[in-house]
Image (cartoon, rainbow, N blue to C red; front, side, top):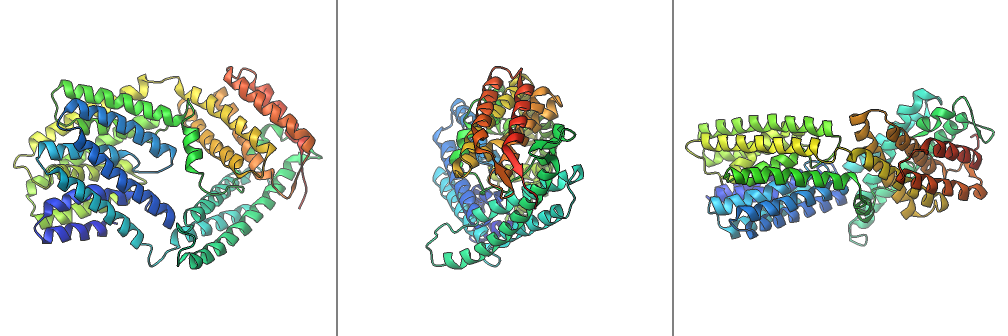
Length: 552
């Protein structure tokens, strides 16, 4: 992806407009998103982010030179972008460049007197180049992402299919399940944007062949799943020796996955209070308010820096201890990045040398942004600072260095306050609420297993429940709420894997009883979940009486 920036920067620099080249970099950040995604997903994500970066730049200009107005804009933008990116599973770098872009543009226009029209136009140009460039990469290997996903799914299923039923097969089942879901999602993401276009037929031929491969792997997975279920069920009753851990061993069946959940499903789940997405957005709002007000009180000129840093540790959610580690890592990366910026300033590079430096920084960001975000921050920091000053290397870097260090410390303190003082009881509440929502989704699905909407809703709730339970486990360990949540998640995954399984025969007369138990359990959770163990035991008993797994 850095080659795109090299071409863009070189083109403008060759005409003596290095300043415009830097402005284009604001839109070029879109190229960092969805780098390994299939054709359609990549086009949609990069195009949307490019447009969002332009809107953020427009917002940064619209608020004028008023620091209070800028703070309000940044607070609203940060919390909204964090919510949208976590809810829609955007992935790293998520909301960070959207939050940073608004403030950087405001600083460039009102502190460095750059023409607003130039900033907006070049941000738009940079975004357009990012879209064209990231899609051009797929010209030679248009099906590479989905082929990789399908190959990984086949290998994982083959390994699981060769294993013997038992506790040792559980990790293999989880891996095969996740790989199947990833393969279906990749094929869904790779579908032609225009099904009746001139190249759609050829593309669908390849995708259909890959789909056949995944269906074959899914069939082997389901056969192996039936063997696992038969191993733990005896004569339509739960084996008493295995019942306590049955659903732990059965967890993870994603064979019924229909690909990426629809955006409306993801957003409707995320908007249900309390949800992890809304809690994350609220924490981001609290942190940016604190950082912004402190910066204003100190007459600071870089509200965008302190607020962006306050949000960067929080905007992707997760357990509070993980967010705390993230804040410390970002602090270290930013401090080292400021030092790297200082070294660049001391070197007094020429415009062409700056082109090489900027492209190198962009390349390093691309290498680390998805897996080592703290290390990526080391290179994002000088990149953002060079863009914010418009390539005008200051004679004395110490004022900028001192100001940014102070803003960084303000941001990290604000982040820690938001993490540990805001919503301390929320993780357990979110877990109970998500467990309750999952039970309601399971009740809807078990009555209509062929309805794609009910299946998508249940699968989305199960994945959210896994995420929330993992975060609460990190913070609180194996609490009753975590135990109940994981048991319900296990039941839900088993339902998805067996409700439409050829090897499973269901007693329809008992389905309504199971559905009623699920709805009662959901209400019980709303009252605190004091009787959840009894509810879960009843569910297990009824499921054992409702299902018969036939041998293959």
